[in-house]
Image 1 (cartoon, one colour):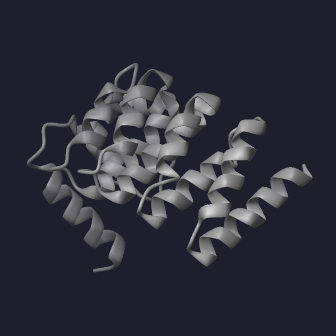
Image 2: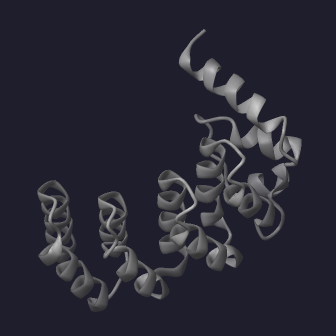
Length: 173
């Protein structure tokens, strides 16, 4: 049995104990598939993505499903508050938080700056790095200033160098 089959079997077993719509479960289980907003709605996400937010928040569901759900919420601007909350929730797996942060930044743009600033001060290097990467996506001089501040205080050399390279690319545009 190959790795993909094992993942699907494990996810199916996890899902059997949850209350998510069967069609939405099916969509979330396929790592190779990319769906658009209309397809997520058709699958049972709800017109505003509420079912996806429920999956992403359910700490009893498989982590991979929660990650996929958090990422898919990037199609649903109505769920910005839920994404911001997920990104800050220490009870969530780091991977779920990172996907929520990415989706939130894509939706909120400049409104994401306060959250990105808070997470750039995290004790977890992965959260600081993700905050920095997302700061590089946000338009405006405020995001550049926050990125420079993060670079100045970043103690992990690899993270600092990656942010320096990203900022240099951004400033060349």
